[in-house]
Length: 607
Ligand code: F6R
Image 1: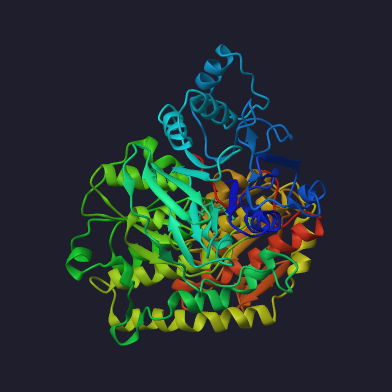
Image 2: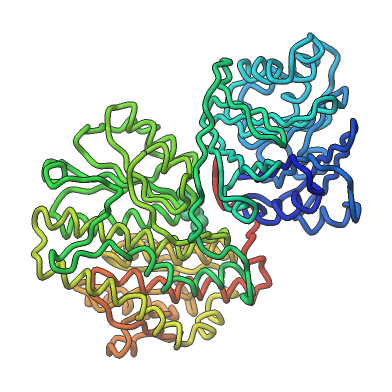
């Protein structure tokens, strides 16, 4: 949540900062601002709204070669210009941008009031600028002042600080990511590695408790306690994928249609056909470990949780091993019992979701092992787990997650065959699943060649009071995913239930014309789903049916959308596609901002 970009070097800073903000906008887009330093003056330019609004207040050129920038997702204080970052200290000496939450900001603010300093914003971040300025006035160096103030702060931060009288930037990280990019005689700072990739592939990931002094010559890294640390330079993967919009109308559209190729990347090199299984090398799992595993725990939020629910079912069915899917945000508060021999898979596109990070820490604190199932390379979850699997979706910039979902499901399918083959899964069945997975990118393409009557489905849902989504077995989490997509980008209230649960309550909502989306692929629960269709129809509901192409069940829908036939364990990879398109096209019809839905941000880095 919120994006930070910073620059120090020989180039004109302003266009670089604006470009950085544009790439980070998906992390928060309530308001944006830049701080530009030239000689001994710092100019602040801020605006409510997206980068486009900021550009209307920016000068056409500026001589600054040092600067910081921020795009905000509001936590403390409303969306106003005063609350927009950068924030300046009372004396104009310190300017900073901050991601995270300062939990004891009220106490820090009270101390400022006692010294006669009034904050001009409602944010928790501004207090840090004033306290650092006070610490400088007491004769401390910038590094000492920052360390001193952060030792008194409680909470989380990714911080980038600019000083009027010092030619350097100070960055600090505690619970909110910050990455430094090394150029030739210049340094870049970003809260997200993909905003650096166009400038350099040599990056330094700050760890929690790190503080970096950044100048155009390079970086001096230390712990907040003062101890010097050697900066570890990592080379970014050049094959990360295209993050430009290109000819696509929206990132969501682009990312939906990228799914066949993204899936190819995810499964490449991971299929062992003759052994009837997949293999995830980064998990570093021996047969002995897998055989002794008492259960598999999966964790995630939102879309990642839906993928985890599918993973749970696949693991149980292929390995006959208990598996449980947990919502990360609930995990820690429920004081879970952790078995050190169990495998815990933390599923996350961004690898920065605070709730999932907190759940991993809980597992590790209790002696358990956690593995990341993550998209963003080098992200906090990937590094915290130190083992796991990258899903290789490439950059996902639409707030609504699409291609990460299918690749999470694919990676968990591969894992299920791997652990399944140490137990219950026969070689022949494992091979059939892996062959099916290898064909799935083609099947996705075949679906995209003829997506079916999505627009008719849009007509049924666009003006509905609410939409009910139903599915059974593997299709129950798919129904939830379809509901989440439609709700988050088209703002239509959606409910999702396992189809059998419908008659235990949600059926009360149905009236003449109510739209119900039913996911009914050709699997062993299809006939039971059929009963739910009849029950809905008997109450006057209009059925949008997602089914296998050519299956006679298609007659049961008012609008029927067929997807190609696939192995029954792989149906979520196809049935989710029309649901993503339904959400996308409905949002377009309603005039919603598809890639930047209200109140949301791409990566939720606060608990
Ligand atoms: C839904 C969506 C969110 C995320 C959730 C987890 O489209 O994007 O529900 O899935 O915030 O994010 P990650 O996967 O980054 O941990």
